[in-house]
Image (cartoon, rainbow, N blue to C red):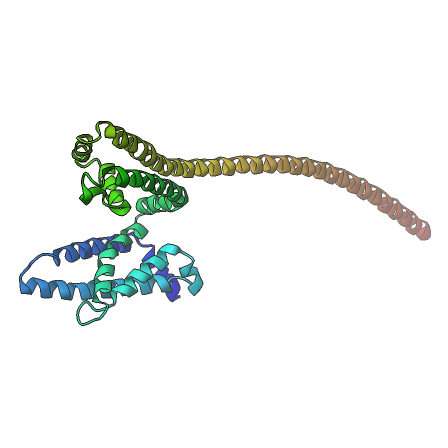
Length: 301
């Protein structure tokens, strides 16, 4: 009985919108706490945080109790994600050795919007599915960075040690070039010594930015389209199966109609036979009555 009540609460649209509103307010309060505010506002934020944490604990408890079996709750990965964040938020903000973790989880609470909004959840699932392919592209980018950083460290270390001293610093410099943030300054500095060094930067940008980054975007888009195509294919298969079932139903119905017509014919024949039997029986009874009547008349005479 309680399970049904809890399930009706969790499926209520008002309840979902209330949780989303509380998550947004919680995020705003966490952001406000990073500013220098009067002491009374700090106390208000502290008390409000306790209230919100209690609300989330009750909300998780209601969702947990809305399942008949415990394992059904944990079958959904988003439920596990929400539970970890809410349980972690129970860590006190003050007077705790893990205060940093408690504050970090309170900031991450805004990610719970993903589990409540189907559109965001869909995007997150697309990213998760694309992770293996994105991982391969990142590995390819690391190899590219490593090779170019090695060349850059060998060629340009004497020009500017702050940017090209070793391979790790060179990789950071290449990441700056990747973002296209003032990369021409770095290029002109090396071109003063090596006029053809522009080939190094331009080739890196073409491969890393225009090829690999766009390839990463293409992987995500392809995963999105694949998901949509699979849904459309699933719907078409369901429709085809439904049409087959309807055709089979029509065939069965036609066969049933034929069987029913045959049954009606057999029933009519049976009724005719019964009528014949009844008529014959009546005739025999009448004959017997005539005989009995004749015998009675003969006895009277």
